[in-house]
Length: 494
Image 1 (cartoon, one colour):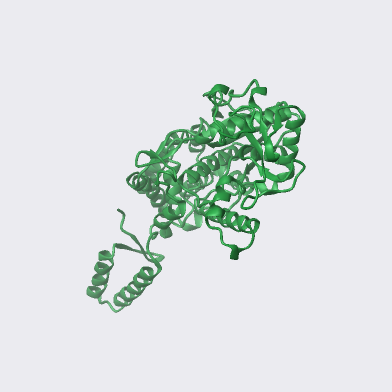
Image 2 (cartoon, one colour):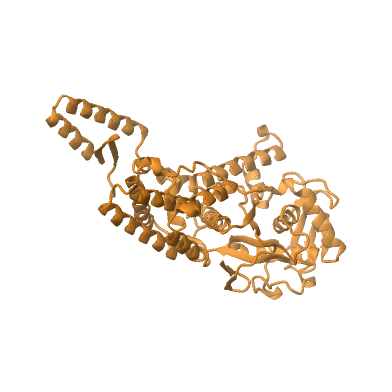
């Protein structure tokens, strides 16, 4: 496998720290609002990486955290403060639980596999405090006023090696803190500031963790190798996290453990809306929940994975509809296969991907399997992978045009489609259900009623009435097909 390392700024051969194993950490969301398309893209990208590693035979231990204590969360609580709703800690838990549930619901809809580990900052306080105490003991950290603790980055001679930012150009979230030795030092622990703030009792005094320390501590607690020069194989996140977040994580882990945090660093590109980087401050943050009201999660996933993960994705509904045509082709092919031959994988987890892969891969077309794995194993070359799929579908349709009853060939194609589902997370729906997406329940009921009346008219040999009903359905944007299994219908293709 070839992987683009953000530190080396080049593609390199992936070699795991322990043969056959990958320990993979992704920075998750700060849960003070609903997930946006940037979250969706990042989650889909690293879900795709995870699926690929599993397909290539690796045992993957995958973690994604939730930042559930942070300045932004506290500000949201303060802005919506209501004494009738309990104390600030209860409101914190209620708020973060609500947005975690919202995030997971959206990711489920996008076909993103749940992480093996989903640690929360508030549940990781002992590990966080322990790491900060180690940094204090080794002289890399120092105490400021009111129980604040900072990392003195001048003590880390390798600071900047990840992002290539030198110490003279570092920035801090708290530029003006008067108790810092230098303005570029960053907070490991924030002392309790009084009413309206949130703090936890600890050996460091009452307070709460800074943003950067939680990821390092969680990795130490849940993922770190004991006897390797790096703590984990892969650390990943959005390109906006490279500096200062990942740089600071790397520094504090290096100082605390005398080892580097990750052997490889992966970063996905931004999502732009109307030519601008998506952000709440610009008012162009597109929530996933809003997108899912318009598009099925698989259609949205198909679009978001279609641009190479390191490139900027310029979101547009026109491009989304173009990408949907590619998905339409997949379901058209699936529709041509005998239902009894299709692999129904159901809702699977990461462990089950391996089992399904072992079943399906030997029965799929060998050349197709080799080509799609080679494409994705070259730093997720998605355009190449999609062209391999396009060629497979084209050849399959040509063969079925000539030999529409070739059951053995259909079986092979069914396994090809199963591999696409396992790798890319698309193609899981029933083909008829896919072509009915976007039709509300009331309209479906009306369509079924009209189909029943048409069947009755045909049975009575009232073909004029049957044709009239067909025309009425056509005017509703519905095409009908009479098959040996009965009359099927679907929406007009746009």
